Length: 504
Image (cartoon, rainbow, N blue to C red):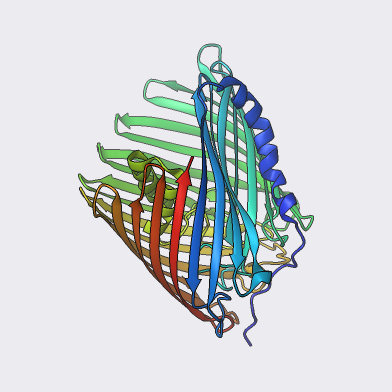
């Protein structure tokens, strides 16, 4: 008998969610502000978005509603000497005309900063983010910004990472690094964790040969009280066979309790290569036999004159090397940077890039979890760019499964042993004039059926028009249609969205 998705009880306030971001800011921003007083660029902005939707509740029998969203924000960036940083913050104030009790607010934050504290030796990186992420892959999927969804949570993540580099005896390079990462989800313990990582690397190169020694510890602590520690020691030998081809082999031991058994030791061995067959082509392969089986990371990319293709395939433990949206984020960054070079309006360029892809790449195509999982991710992206036209196609495949004898107290893996998702996105943009552009996006996101849990299928189509209305004002008009098929929470929605953005 099918079971509805199980959500972990809500209990964390948004104020606590933002603590992680505040910690990271406190570490990095004071030094940045002192060293970049003359190099800072501050761009306040405000946005107004009005949405008419035929289904404000995203339910099978939902009713129409008007949703007003006011978004004040600020973007601060700067670089001076050994310090650089970027802070982009927006506050979404959402008001429903008919269901006023659903009115709410959301924080969106991106912080990325770095400093060279001691010349060529000591570095400090700090970053933080706050964004909405899906709680369950089997639950209701949202149809757009401004509509509330019980299957989404505001997730705050912060990382602080110091690094020390030195050259010993004039021949051996040493790198010591540490990293502290914490994540908190608003209203659920799924996705709440703290990681402490530390590593020391030694290495040298002699002609075409090189060697390296690495020792590391990874420690993960989840909100339910469970903790997992992995210690690893690896020796590496490398060969620069040609200027375009490098090879390596490595081996060692690792000790972990991540499989549910206390402190078991395992052998670890692997090999890899990096090959540049042409100036526009790059191939990399990295594979190891690990405590959980075979891990790998493969990537292939090639740039044509007006196009680019990228394919990635990774398998590993969550948080280590599984990055399902890497190619999609690269395309998003390209769209965003192209827009910024043209109109230099961060909020508008963010919206245009999101509309161009049909989804927000800062939101993972995954779900919140309460323990480490084994992840296999594949992604293929094709991008074409002409004088006035651009086309992008992105296909993704993700599979998350239980790791060893882990106890999942919540989340999808507490219901089924694995979760599989397939995604396909098509987007096209046409520059009507120097000030106006037209965009079309279509996407499909499928969560496949697993045992007693039925799958879901979301299809989305969106047409948008953007125009620069003045030196500091931009407007966007979009029409979207969403179909979401599910045994528990199906819905259809049509919406007209108009927005104005002004930067001071």
